[in-house]
Image 1: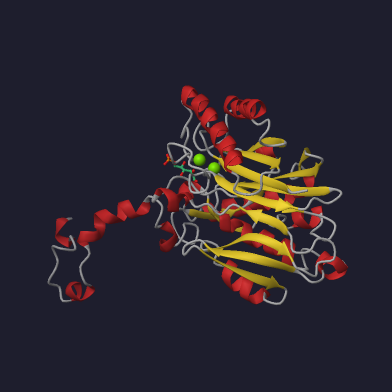
Image 2: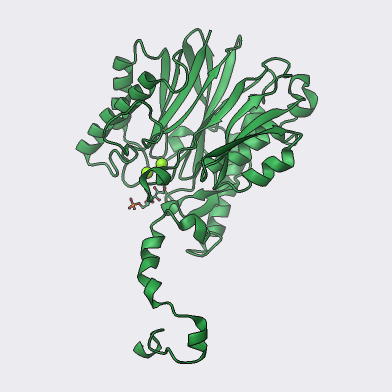
Length: 385
Ligand code: F6R
Ligand code: MG
Ligand code: MG
């Protein structure tokens, strides 16, 4: 039987700044889905991280199903009305188009979905990040599916021993490439280390996989809001679905990839590098410097048209040290203020609000040779002090 897992997320307004979702808005999205989802999807869960509402759905309409996308879009629209009434900040922020047109891609919300062949037990984890970008998943997804120091199953479980296939997207050029791990591991890393451009979109098992051949086992949202809107409209806070166990990374191998609070870009004004802090859903409000960037993990199993769960996976003392380290890194890196490498490099600032500031100075630049010859005192403004 064909089963599709679909995860769609959007920021439709938050309290007080880009901090957290409001209960009434969350409840409206839940109410809408409860009433309107019958006959379209089998089951769903509404969660959140920071200012983003996240809908996990299961159904048999396949990927790119218009009716499923529209259901999520309409639920977000309905939630937006409540956000507007309360005067929440950025109400409807990620709904960039006026009306739904067949497919939610390119309309603002982030989407990750995959068709699966359900196993006897079908466990998976939904990871949801706020104040960062799709490339923030490159490091942990690579670790889960290709790094034996993170995932010993790659070495000691026969059914994982052949490795996995990585579908990597160049999100600037809209191109994709399929690469095999471990054979092409160095090629994979050479791309995905450039996380603002090359992002892991999907992971597949290989044909020779012992238990689940040629199957999509992980999918990540790659939607770039700035590419749609042409300007900065919030970071592209990503989400991912990762299937686990029985020939795939164990739950704990998938979780282990987040034990080190690695640096991601996003955070304040989408313009800073900072540590990714693993937190419980209830602790995902964005406070210090609009962050630090956070990740929430929700564990589910699917069976007979039903989702069971979630378990809030980072709601656990085992992640206290990662949180402490993330706070220490925050203390350290914040002291750099607006300087690189805390602030992102110039090329990554292209879609932020900085270019508008730079525009003002453009006409005041003169060639350095002219300055050296001392002929342009006025044009560099030296006399105007
Ligand atoms: C980052 C983010 C926030 C805002 C910041 C300024 O993704 O959402 O850090 O960029 O709070 O927001 P505005 O410009 O809406 O006042
Ligand atoms: Mg926001
Ligand atoms: Mg957000």
